[in-house]
Image (cartoon, rainbow, N blue to C red; front, side, top):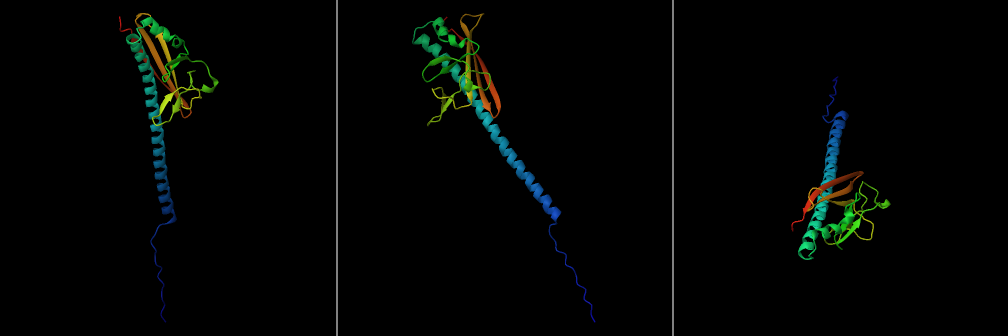
Length: 188
């Protein structure tokens, strides 16, 4: 009688532990990629807000400089008339400019504008064919506020110092950027 020994075939494949390790490594790489994408998105939003704040500060400086030049060249106004136009900007709360209708308004506390230290109203973002920031009768829908303070220079009567601050909300944090600029009476 023949005795047959049955040979057990060894099937090669992954064990449960090897499979779990592979799934874990794959999961870590997916989580890492999602984290990098999320971080990149928030960095892009932060950079966009920084650039917008810089443009809003520069817009205020350019507006006041242009107003000085236009007042002297076309309006025949003197330096003191130009300075008196910006009296509402000489307080601690400062002022804000509506570029569209050439208006200057004093900033005052508004409970609807309750973030940050600036008490000026928030900008409204007009998202037409060319988006731009402005002030209108509607409450501001953007996260940006701008304050302008203009002070006479005690050592030079032919100079005013302009301080522009822009605040915005970046998530739950309030960020701000400031700019100091001197404007001279170039007619003297």
